[in-house]
Amino acid sequence: MRGDTFDLMEDLYGMGDPEEEYTVVLSDTEETVRELWPEIAAVAENLMERGRLEGDEVSRIIERAREQRERGG
Image (cartoon, rainbow, N blue to C red; front, side, top):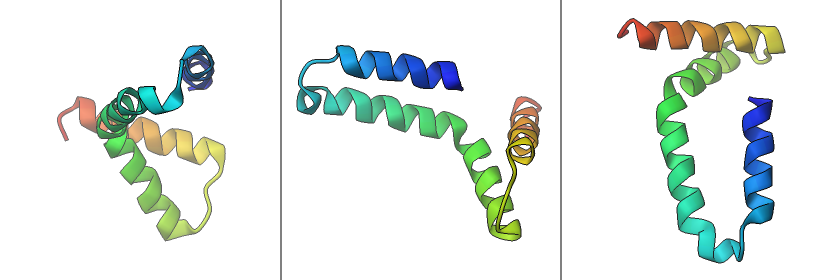
């Protein structure tokens, strides 16, 4: 994920006027959130239940959500 963030920052610094690029960034963001929604929801549900999560717990939750999605669940 860090690489994705780094790439995003490089892209943002290379862009022109942010207002002109807003629709592109919004569209890309919406697409990414839709794609990752099962993982986002799984982390949020666990966080609401427990109140706090450690990094390794978040990683395991994300992996389980991805495995379920890949199996069609």
